Length: 546
Image 1 (cartoon, one colour):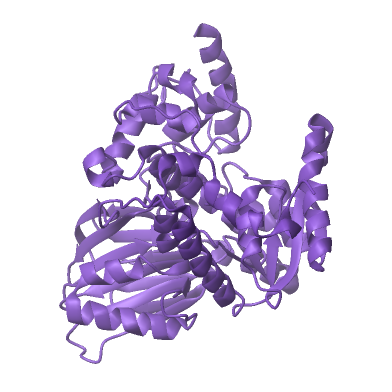
Image 2: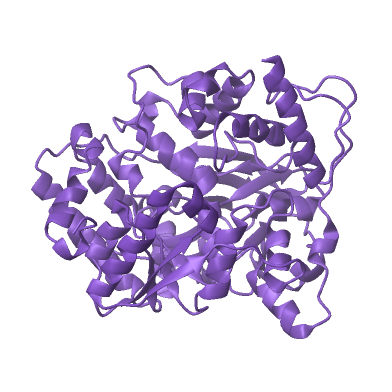
């Protein structure tokens, strides 16, 4: 462990330098206090948010940074620095909204000014049950549910909306409303939050919260990620409730926030509560029954997505994207693309399959296929500026994000098939052991994570935060729900933001009712991906091996 500690210290030093901090003592285990002198307070470089002198460059940077981002504040107002101060502002009752240029907002308010009963939708919901993408109609229907039946009924109805959105609902008396904050199924438009004595801040990025309140980078998060990067290759996402910034917490998928606001907008207690599953899991052994319900739901969802703009599929040789493509209509399928990191091709020749297979499948369907080359943006260019502003502490997936921003049209709707493994199992090492902090650490990073001091407390905090225990999971498999709530909740939204920087991105699997349909199948069928096999048996033109 001594060698491991030394390697962690060296990596952590580099991470903290990148975050604008100076390491003055050796790191302790994750989530434990550091021995010796404290690290100097860190700040985010505000020069990253300086307004560009060229108006066209300035507009492009402002339009791209943070994608379809937002910051919402109750109570005492806050100020965002530099070009973020040029974001649109809107006030809805006690909510002060700061909106990125491309962020879609829809408000449905009450007829009676004495009542709150207001619904604010950030983003684009898709109502598959009623066949609608009309956000004003969707918001109006939700407001009527709130006024008639209260916030719990609203949550139950809104939870089955597909699309990508965050919902804010104000219920009760307008002088002291109750705020409910609800994410979509995967929390794909994430919510990070911080409560203080002057109000509550919600934002699509912890960086926005940090900028609003001058918060330092999180040493505990940097340490945990540094340890994790020594245990596995590839991307290591933040564990538990740790975020890149001190004092900021994430809203977990399948959970909501509730806060009673005073007349000045200052909240009392802010509660993070699990709301799903609503009911005990039901099992259906008839694969044909499940496949039929799955196909009906997926087909209608994709039809509705086609109303939003030209659909371009992110297509690989894998199963998830081929299964969603199998349910698309030729009338909505505009193009396909695959991105390629040339270095990966050199290290692993089979990566070529993820290039040639989709190219052949697209040709068979008669639709264009683009190959996007991963590459870094040159220093000081528009994308370099907007990406550094979005990720000032640790840059994420820069090459892929740049390729999509530079090489795909800005008016498309990217169809991204992440999330299918929520319903077809991702975790291969499944055990019958009870839920425990060390078991959750192993699900995050593999068996070696059990032995790293400090990981167990991180996941004990997360399990309490998410109320992640068997009696609340109502028969749903904890491995799959951990993948859903932790993997997609902590990593997924960053993947989706890669596309949001330049256009709109939608997720066919970001549909709670669809995921419930998939979870009806017995575990053996889900592990064997028998639903996918049934779908592709009917589409020989999408056979990767033909």
